[in-house]
Image 1: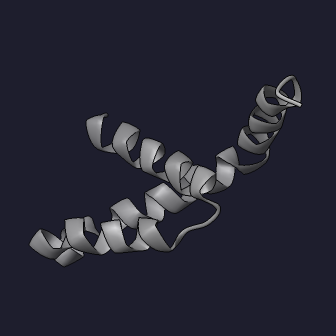
Image 2 (image 1 turned 120 degrees about the vertical axis):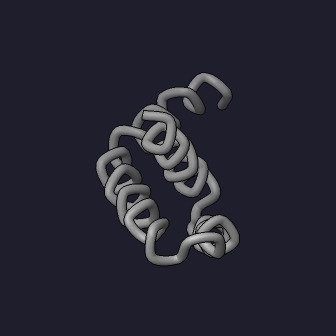
Image 3 (image 1 turned 90 degrees about the vertical axis):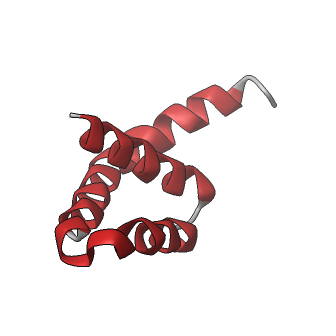
Length: 68
C-alpha cells in the first residue's frame, strides 16, 4: 500500500501543476488591487481549495512567485 503513495503523489502533481501555477498567478494578480487586505483574502481563497494537496501546491507556487 505505501509503495503506491509516492507514485500517486507524483502523478497528482504532474496532473495539476499547470493549474496550480495558473491559480497562484490569478491570486497574485489581485495583490495590488486589494492592498493590505490581500493577505487575508488570499488565505481565505487557499482555504477554500481542495483537495488539501492541491491547495498546498497553489500555496507553494504563490510563495515561489512572490520570492522571484
